[in-house]
Image (cartoon, rainbow, N blue to C red; front, side, top):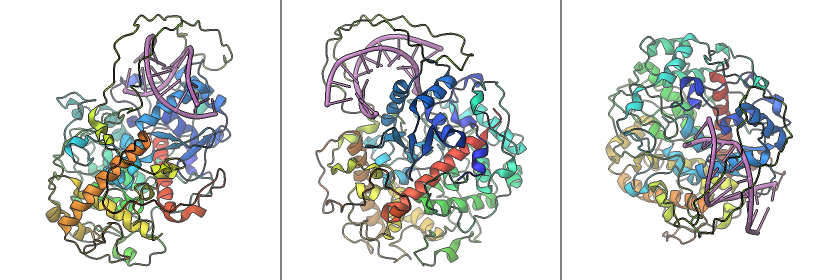
Length: 606
DNA sequence: TGCGGAATTG
DNA sequence: CAATTCCGCA
């Protein structure tokens, strides 16, 4: 249970909004939740529950109190806090676990997106429909980190790219090997203070991770960084799919997956994440090939394990991706590649395989439910009755927020419909997803397969992986114009993974495509996948967001999925579910944990 | 309990 | 923007 991970916590710079002035970083609720979750001290108030990234708030009031303290909002209460939490639903950062009180679930994908903007979650999205990243579907492209800056958040000139102030500091610290400095003494919440983590505690992967993300600081060369961290080759099983037993927190390992970035190469103008400006500095990383290789290796591993997008390391064909280490599959995986292939790295980097620039918005549109009608605004003013209950902590918030200002005049304004930004357009497509959404928790993030009803997936428990892999691939190709064959094949081959159907990987025959596609030409396959993927995303998103039902036809496949194990309330034991969902879940939780860990690790200093 | 709209805030 | 605050609805 408790592991070193607990030891420190702090927020990495990226956890804050870059835009905000240096001194004013404000913590976001989910960060805070994550923070609490990883600290045992607070296990009585909030703790992970199950394997899904779910957590339960055992003591809502206390959590609210803490939150209020942190934000200097003495008036905070669970009601409000929960509103904020709910607010995350739309952002897809969180979900409510239905049926369980005070239980919510993190949407891993989103988190990753937010935290690791560089990572390409596209595949994840596809494989994990539910949380498919909001992408302007109009383009038809799949989600990927666009080279261009997202308009919604960034200024058009892409200036943000250049201002990595934040990151720089991180880099510096990393370089130093220690993470501790929080210049601004915002450490208000003393309650949370933690022990600093020594650099030594960090796992190599993490370090690697971090370093990868570091901007090319003038003074720090990546070399030095890497050197410092000496990223070791990925362990054979970096992320054991250990079933996170009830006590979920694993050691703070960071998944390389998270860390990965898709394109280290220089010219990639990376798009910063929507909500967070991505720290990508000048937008160029310069790592030495070796380092990159290692890193990528690790990433690959994780990709496999977590079934993240391979796109993440597209440009390094020489890297061999280890086979997933599922115990069950005896395939030759590990041998093949656990460690990097010693191929020479030719990184030519190519590039940009991502032609499609589009921005993804973290906060997609709320969707449909909204414009219902316009009720008369007549409201009466309420007077804040004094709720005094919480006065304790937080003396620092000196200014009591004034209350009492309210007046609203707008009455009966024109019905305004919020038009959601494109991003969710896809959502427009409606699909009928069975109601799985209900307990679906699984569906969401972690159990994509079911969600999209791909029957194919269900068949073999183990197969999941395969499917996932496929999903991964698809991502790769999703790009519209993407030149699948060329680059892809190269990569696939080089990597030795992807494309199960293709080259090697006869495995259980990739079931995924409806029509059994193993032998289909790549291109075709991709195409197919792509569409499927899109559909999936749409579905999942749709399904979740709105239960719209229309339905997109879908050629053959769509069938009700067999009922999956149903975890009853408490009954769910992560381990037990290992079957189909298990893998995904586990994966996710690991990721989550890692993310959490990452959060914490970065700056314990505060 | 939980949801989500609407207005407000910093 | 991300809450915070308030509230009506299930």
